[in-house]
Image (spheres, rainbow, N blue to C red):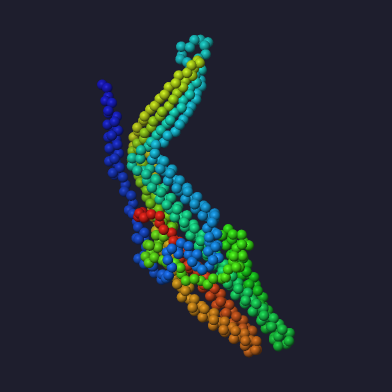
Length: 482
């Protein structure tokens, strides 16, 4: 009895139908999570007023400090950190094409050449060498693994999500660099302000010591008083020297960030006037969710959740049948005994349907690993959201506190300066002692340095808020919940 030629096709259709039924039993993906579910309903810290969202992206051009703007612009040109971020983005985009290639048929060309002899036992005369045969073969081989259950398409989705995350992180690198330059610049300005105060204090103490020595030599001042004045002057000079070294070190850090030659940087800093802190130029959305949607790192963490969720689908798809198709087209030339014959051949198939039955636990382990990676990505995403909320709240609190403290700090400086001048006049008239004068001087020095630090805190809080709010970045497309 001859088998029906249509039987294999029926079997193939039955197997495919069975596979489709099995696909309906696939494990459901984890439930989605949303950004809003991770956030408080409103900010607890006071929001700054004024400014606009557009100014957030390049706030340094609106801060009234041309030197700062020039330094940040210089740092953003050809920075190695930014180049590395762009390289990672290029890798992520290339990975999308790698995964997409898995959805398309694969084709290759191969060629072989062989040379040897062949004989059949009993047909070759004794003592006669068999003929030399040269075989030349070239052909095109093609194969296509059909993505029945979407496992390969899920890998494309995962690669796309990671490329989107890499694009956001490339912007984050720019935000971080601009913020680092601003932090370093404001830190150097603070150091210079403290140095100016310290040098003024050292000059004042030096003048006091000079007059004390003259008075001692004339017999009007006790040697111990003159020694105290000289020790105070020496201490002030030492502090001034240490402060100058600190400023030099901070300037070198700014050189590394901007890539500018140090002589050029020193010239820019020397020509610029020390800027007073500006009012907040940043606009923060009232709702935390609206603000954190501008955070590149939060977006990238969410993209990783989407990527690992897609990889769960790929791991699940490994449990179900796979369908592959192959084919070849070739040409063969055989040369023997001075003659040659040419042949052509083609084949279509095999059309192969394979269902894994036993893999030693490899598929189950792959599924477990995929779900564990997803759980890790969700945890990292939740931690990133909490960190972002903390950073925004902290920057808002620090900025508000600095602005609230500034009037009192200025009043303290004015009061202690007046008290020091009065004490200095009394000392010169012999109505106050040197320890009293030094105590007044220390009080004035402390409040002057505190005011400089407070002004720096206000500037640093603005930079921190710029960084915490995402630097004006916008998501490239409507977001789907992970």
